[in-house]
Image 1 (cartoon, rainbow, N blue to C red):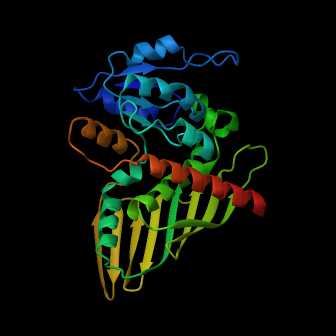
Image 2 (spheres, rainbow, N blue to C red):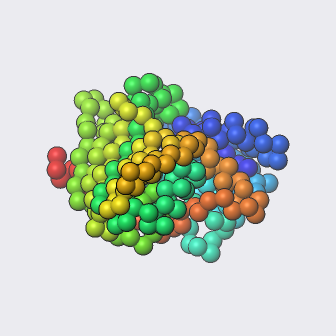
Image 3 (cartoon, helix red, strand yellow):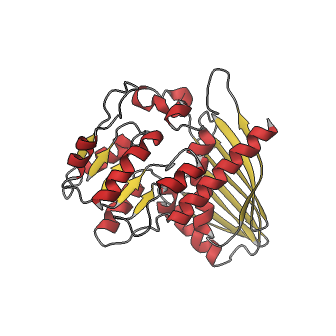
Length: 309
């Protein structure tokens, strides 16, 4: 397994998981010092890292994806890329390899791997809530105030390296979740608002209002809390489903049922990726249409928020 780049905040999670797996030998390729006049990764070093690799995980800055992904495609290895694939919808479309090129490429949308959200998906498929009337989704942590975006992860606050703020960083998971829960349901942007902080070039929090096949959906993402973790509320004509971390509560009429699961974990997507490589499908990874659609919706949300400002 080639780990390309060490700058992403989930690099350590992935590295530690691979180090504990006796079936896996990991080759880590850190970036060279950024001198501004040469690529952070030498082509020869990337080729060497991929020479014996069965698969690759790209955990670099977003801007470096354009340098690294073509190498994994040419090497023909399945590749898991940290999200977003690129900073804009246009760059995303250009960077996605043709479906017939090399090994499959996907992005690390780990909410698809969460047991609690798999249960929610099944409940919605069973139509236990009846027609949906409203949805609220939230994803937050206190990384900005806790110093997560320091050291190698400082690029997360710099648009020059592909950073775009909390609504892009965390909201991308919420949009992808909607696409996964109901692939054929239309999804449109109605409104968006970003929270600004003086001296910070990207927004640490944001809210978007979407229409999901006629159902109003509110998305909120934040790097500054105050609540942390993943939350969701699905309201329908016959009941509600409430998610808090790994806890899922279904209420219909006067009855309620709660299931306890592990909360969503970033490293779960790498576990699922490895199982898929071993011929044991464990998740439904985002396909290229999902990746393009998510990028377009994020760009539209950013445009609506700028216009509002």
